[in-house]
Image (cartoon, rainbow, N blue to C red; front, side):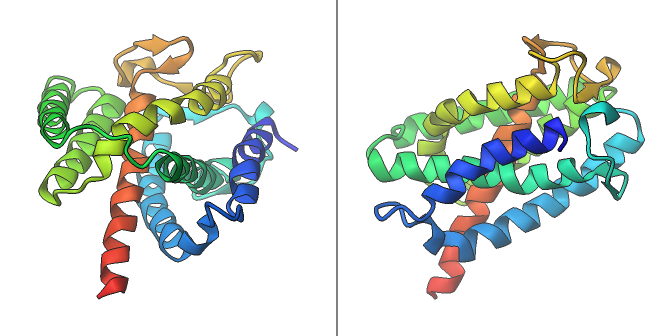
Length: 228
């Protein structure tokens, strides 16, 4: 069993088991959660294949199963299902136990506008760096969507993401070379800012934030459609 697959199993096992907790009953939200995860995963996988083929990043075969789909390791495909599920579960769990934990509406709006402008500028001034440009633009778009939809999600997600970062730092840290010999996922630093938090490219934080937020916004919209 590959190291990458072990990390995914460790990340998804507990959230999956706790989905049946009597108070959380997260399994009842699966009809919204899984369609969202699969749709967002499809978009991210398409870009992942493109960036992998262009050498923006790649994978160390020593830590993989050797099974590939669309030029990507099987583990990388599963990443877009397991990690969003675990993250959404953690966000919803925090919201269940701390429903009042959220930013004020005015602060949330101001933060959204500021982050949109910052990421647009980052994209403009780093158009020659594929990963930086790609994720800055993707983050700006999802933040703009949250603003236009007048979604309340970011009011809590800006806070819960801080908790989600704890397992993120462990898993992504290992994937990028912390605690192991070499790395599971390598990055071409000519295609990013070259800034790292320990071994994690700074862009990965925006990558995780955008992917989870896209899911949360889509889940919110699916709930509205079903309730009509």
